[in-house]
Figure 1 (cartoon, helix red, strand yellow):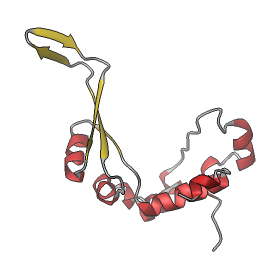
Figure 2 (cartoon, one colour; figure 1 turned 90 degrees about the horizontal axis):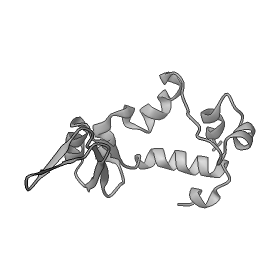
Figure 3 (tube, one colour; figure 1 turned 45 degrees about the vertical axis):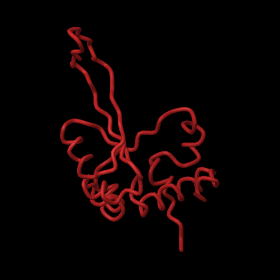
Figure 4 (tube, one colour; figure 1 turned 180 degrees about the vertical axis):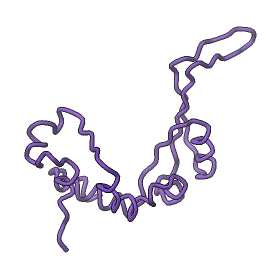
Length: 136
């Protein structure tokens, strides 16, 4: 079938050529816009952005959890250590436990469901000239 020009859609109002000249490997591209711009992608491939559904559908072997320790102090054998600015991270294999960590203020990292990754990684890799990434 016809391949959608995902890169053109994501970098609009820039053209893919302008994106390559001005931003590619030079700057970060922030993709923003009204929700309707990404509605089809989020509804069809990203579980309507439901975190619990995404966690259960991730192909990741483990979910990465990050906790900020800003404002916390550790007490160990009578001494006190300021933990401000330090982060703790660990991996967890259980979606329900990861969701509980998120509700407690943690940040999570995990791969998107296969149907989203197949579209996004393959199409964008090809359109960016990274054909090796499109084969994985």
